[in-house]
Length: 381
Image (cartoon, rainbow, N blue to C red; front, side):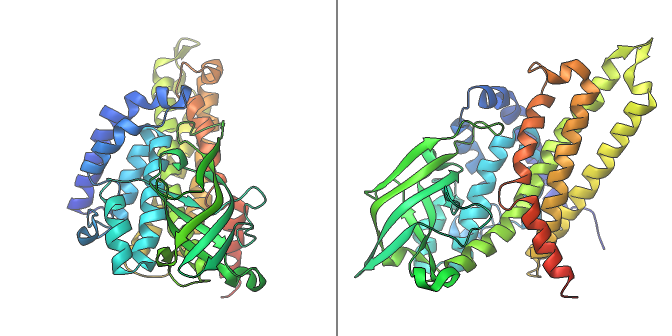
């Protein structure tokens, strides 16, 4: 088994690292404090191919692999977790399902502009009354001839206010339960009845523009159904499996940023006649941070490798996400501790990493849901 990145993957990593350090990181404080959506970064991200990394070139993407996407996403997220999730949603939650379930006509119309970065997408599954219970959709889709009429409210929609394309899940035949959900591709700018609702004031990833999407008699052509009618739950669950690899990479990036900040601070901060890095307690913190981050990265790369090679990866994605997200929270907490009182100050970046890390245990499936997925798998053996 080869644990090394190939030449192309290393080039992608180095390109992403340069972009992250030179363009993303200098904007990160403003993104966080002003809840600023990093719209000025999107054109260069598109130019570098980061908005459709594993989408084939014929459909507007970079034609790369999932491993390259993961290493790039870690670099971006280490600089700014908000920018990382904007990239992750467009790649994993919108472009990927269109590639997998869309017709050639849908790929030409919807996927090409998303994967090229010309347009931005959002994923609309969660609702005010749901969360982990994604099958319990209250949004309704009533068919009338060649159109569907959508009514409902979607919650926690990353990219929502800036998205051009929304992938929306709605109950088309409520009596069928989970087998009555349909996925729709919706033009956010040209669909009367589609509107952006309240924008959340969040603990972390503050610039990601998380909002409600409100549907009031929104008319969507039947040609915009993604996958089969009443097959939307399959689209959603398949999409989340892949999305969890992206969130694991985001978590690794956050953890790495917190660790690197703590390591450098420990060399500079003096106490009792020398740098605090000379104390075994600090050394053990740093050693455990490095070990957990390395393990989380390897688990994430394994899941990405399996997806690249069309092998089952749902369990591996769940394992990577739960471990990487909990690693990010543990590392960020210890990084604050290494900084002492300064870690509690907004003058230092670790408090931002501490806040950003928490969401990785929640979105695209909570840690509890990941354990349900993993337990179901291991009990089948």
